[in-house]
Length: 224
Image (cartoon, rainbow, N blue to C red; front, side, top):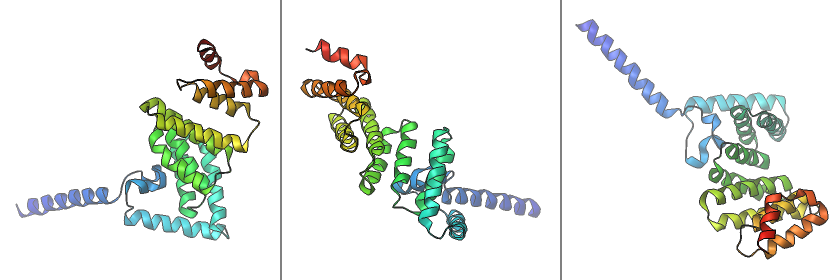
């Protein structure tokens, strides 16, 4: 009986310890943007120790942590293009840990969430990226895409206006891009008044008539 009591107590201790450990250490935290910081998720002691080891190793390889972050960002984009989303998220997280002022880390987080159709969750990351660098037209374009998708999900005109603003931000940097003017035309086509849509349709046609989606063109013709 005494042996059974000790064995039972040991099993219970292991079970409780395992529960406590699982509660302290969030599984797959490295697959969450910024390690779940925006959701107030905290790292456990073991995860912090692993991070410190990683940073120490990178400090040995690179004179500046910014350089190490750039390398990880490059790997992040490579994995993203290869559709290896978990690996991409881990690389962007490591880049963010090395240099939280690297705007591409937030851009990467936004795109990864967008690829998971978590469009509304992606918006804060695009906004953080744009605060750090508003001179990248592709970033503006990707932000516009997420705003547009949130508009389609919610039908809240606020997000359509934000999508338009982001597209205009991209056009300021690429004023001769038929692709961007085509996107702006499509965005304005959702308004009851089509004057702006027709205005940007004309500009798009001057740049490249093939850039306009035929459905958008037909929609604007039918509303004449």
